[in-house]
Image (cartoon, rainbow, N blue to C red):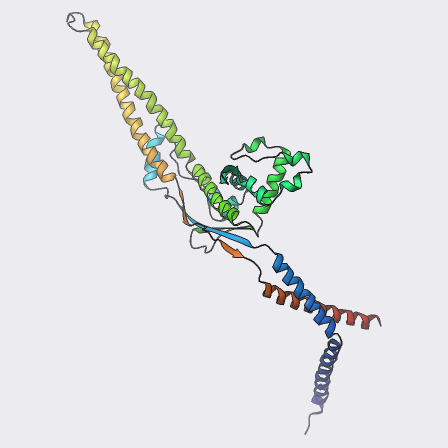
Length: 361
């Protein structure tokens, strides 16, 4: 016996499938009538893609990888800190929060380090200029400034005092900073979070600039990193060195005074006891200065050892070498991609245009 309840459902399914097939056939016939337009759009899109690839300048990518190496504070350092604290000094551990994890990556992209890098001196065609000046030259920026008197004579000298820059120089340097740190120009990151190896990738249309900027950014970061991490220990060494020099001068003076006082009592009458007190006083001063100098020299050497421990190292693993990796969109790839994209967009336009006409009809 046939279940009458299932018959309408089967009929509805058959009708829905039939309608779907008819719709597909209808759209297929519609697109056949527009094939010339679709093909023409594809050809035009392909030509646009090919033209873009043909005239596009290639870019060059410089890659530098490095690892941070530093001594771990603690252990014996705590004992050294306790000994130094007796003399009012703080050997201390390294703070370095700015260099922890991803902070180092953001620091390398900061205006402070990038602008310092841009003002680094380089030699081009026998002349020493800054990297910023080299960037201006290779991008022919001065040609656009010739009509503007405020920009015409602007120069970025190597190692120039950043605080003395004019408003125009600030504006130009800010523009260069934005260009060289854009996501397409500068990429800094760790390939694996489990390792401490960081890579710097610089992409530009000038092969020499990519290499120069990449290497100098790493150098500037290394110098700044060492300066900040070892600042406290280096300050302790400088203070102790000054005190050692001062006490050593007093020690040498005490030696001379003891000798002079001893000469003054040569063949002295034993009955004149008061005459012998002066050499004794000078001998006591000499012993005090000897003790102080010995302690200070010992602490100075320990502080120097602490400075060596606190001084980190950016160990460069791979440097960019010529020829750099060249990046350019292939002509065939651009032709195919441009043609496909133009054809696809044309099909979408025809579909929505047809639907819109049916809705308003």
